[in-house]
Image (tube, rainbow, N blue to C red; front, side, top):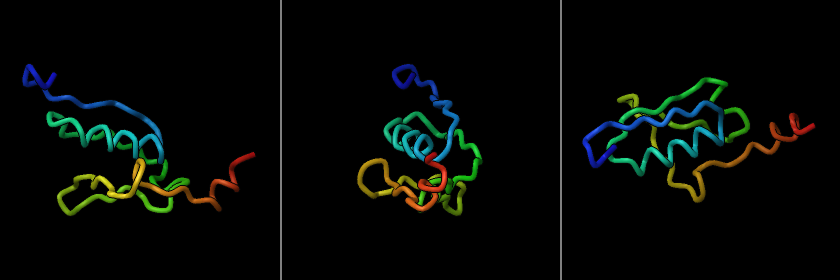
Length: 80
């Protein structure tokens, strides 16, 4: 798509981990200006939701890995 000047938008539905992975992917695509973002709520099983800046852009976290930490307490509540 990039070689032909076509915008690319990955369509990924999910919460938490999936959204963080999608954000990292989008950050590598120079021809991607959109992120599909479902609300289930965004902080589900995460210590911090994806940050949205004043212009409405998702901020790519600078933490290691995908950029998030699991909420151990919430995870333990739903693991069974």
